[in-house]
Structures are given as structure tokens and as C-alpha cells.
Image 1: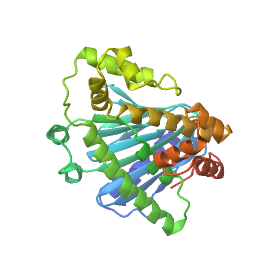
Image 2 (image 1 turned 90 degrees about the horizontal axis):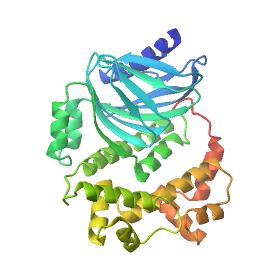
Image 3 (image 1 turned 60 degrees about the vertical axis):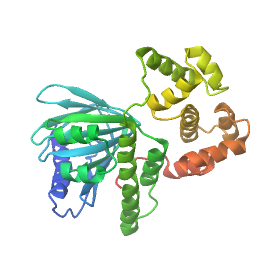
Image 4 (image 1 turned 120 degrees about the vertical axis):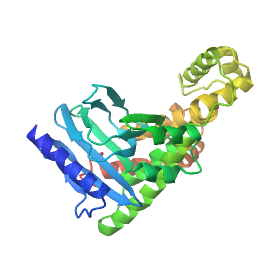
Length: 333
């Protein structure tokens, strides 16, 4: 527990010194080897703090900290999951892999993170004041979201959205930073400046008011359609087949699907295929031709082009990058 407290205090010292505008000479807190392997790093730019945590604990752990300054956060769980607990109310909230969260933490509140031992956890978070967040969202956020931000007084999660393929690729670039020294910092800054606007825009796009009146029956049918779509990578059902199976006309199916899930039927299928391929390339030695077939592409060239459009790199480039990294946990960024 003493080691855990010491590590949490080191992270908090970095964060609150930077949040208060003080200079942080060494923005890295390395986890004690007795606890696990990994580190917490901090970067500051344009009134926004950005932290990156990458670690693996030896045992199940509870890390507690008290907020010293009210702030908003945008957090991404790139790998692993953690449970957050509020000390005053006992409320819990699960932060899950491949999800993005927008929230607020009030000053003086104790929050405990409950994490499993042996699980690699990578998380990225942006922190900013209420005024700075409102400046960044001016002109793109709707009135409902802006009111929720202005009205936040107690710690709360305001929004949760899935991590998009584009956000995932930007995060992958950050994790795979090939440089050292000052070049590393410059590269990190460029990725940070790309990621925060992207995430804030995606929160605003996901928060747009509905245009179609969708009944409970419609929503259930659309959920069923998404389930049917993702049941098998091949062969995918046609729009006409899906329409008959769930009992919605094709217009309501296509428009209602995009409204409810924030993406088209085709994009959902493509994302599902690409996510499957991404994990297969990272975690197996299955030949690329076979992965193409498994994801529904009879022509491997079409698969490679689709993968590059989706992630900005070819399947071969991703596999080589993962091999070079050795799936090792970076000690710092």
C-alpha cells in the first residue's frame, strides 16, 4: 500500500503542478518494480494536459487519489479496463477497452481505480478547465452538450462513445513513436494536436439530436439488424435481406441505423472486418491471404487496399511494427 500511495502521489504531483502552470522538469512517474511494470507520462500544450499510462500490475490493486483541482477530462481506454469508485457515494463506473469518455471531476473528491493484476492497461487522457473546454467546443457543440458542461458540479461521466478507427490509428502512431529525445516530444505533440480535436468532434457528432422518430420497436429492430450484420464476417447479408429479417423498410433501416449507431451499415461491416483483421495480424502468425479470406475478401489486393484506407498502413506494415515492438510495454512516452 505504501508503494501504491507513493506512486499515486508522484502522478498527482506531475498532474497538478502542470495544471497550475508550474514547470515540470521530468514529466514521467515510473511504477515501482515491486508493483508492476510501466509508467505515467505527462505532456502540456495550449492549456491542455495530456497523460499516457501504460502498465501491468503484478496483483489486483486499488489506487486512490484526491482531486486537487476541478477539471474536465477526455479519456480513452486503448487496452485493458478499470473500475472507478467514488468514495463519498460508493458509485462505480467501468472504463472499458476501445471506449472514449468525457467527464468532470470536482475538487477534493477521492476516486479509487480498481485494476486487475496481469492485465496490460494503456489509457490516454486530456485534462482541461471548464473555460478551456468551452473554448474548444465553441461553434461545434450543440446547446444540450454545452449546458451539461456548464452545469457539471459533482464528478460525473457526461458522454461515452466507441473509439473510432481513425482515433485508434492516431493512438497507434503515438504508442509507436519511433523517435528519441526532442524529436520524440515534437512527434508526440503533433499526434496530441491531431487526437484531441478528433475526439471532441466525434463527441459532438454523436450528440446530435435525432432526426427520425424511432419507436422502441424500431430501436429493437435496428439493434437486431446490427447483431445479424456482425454474426458472420462472410457472406454479409444484403440491405434487402436485413430489411426482411428485422421487419423494417430499407429507408428506415439505412437512415435509422446511421442515426442510432452513428455510422452506416457498410461502414459498420467494414469496421468489424478491419478490427478482426487488426487483432489477427497483431496476435497470430496467420498468413495475410488467409486473414483476407476470413474477413470476407476473396481478393487479397482489395483487402490490403481496404486495410490501408482504414488504418493508414498495410497489413504487412502493421505486422512488422508489432514484431519490432515485440508487444513490449513501453516504459515511458
